Length: 166
Figure 1 (cartoon, helix red, strand yellow):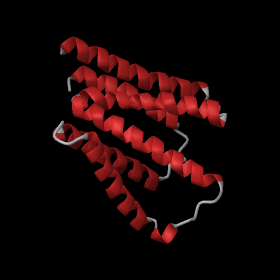
Figure 2 (cartoon, rainbow, N blue to C red; figure 1 turned 90 degrees about the vertical axis):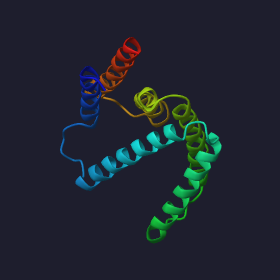
Figure 3 (spheres, rainbow, N blue to C red; figure 1 turned 60 degrees about the vertical axis):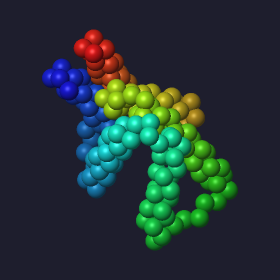
């Protein structure tokens, strides 16, 4: 990454911080978990890129899902809550959307480089906000909108810079 790309990353990360807010309610344990999740996600993206087209995306996704099911099953033994009513449909939807999201993400990382594809994952913020607005009637403040604009702006600036230097 070039110096200017680090600045664009800083803009996007600043947007994340504004979106989260500086209210001090962030649980330190939650912060450790999200940093660990980001680290492991990065490892997954790089690994998928290195696998390349050697394995079909469905094979990669099925291994991912199998390992996640076993790990999640073991970790949930002492915290298990049986779903009731509509929760079964929500879990089914989560599984279906998660499967296809993972499949297309795997295809993207197999066809492009990590540095090309990973920044586009910021677009998830737009979809999350849209679903929050339309389905859950969430309300976003001016600070939230500023954070989202900074995230997407950093992404766009990085993509434009990358396309001009490639």
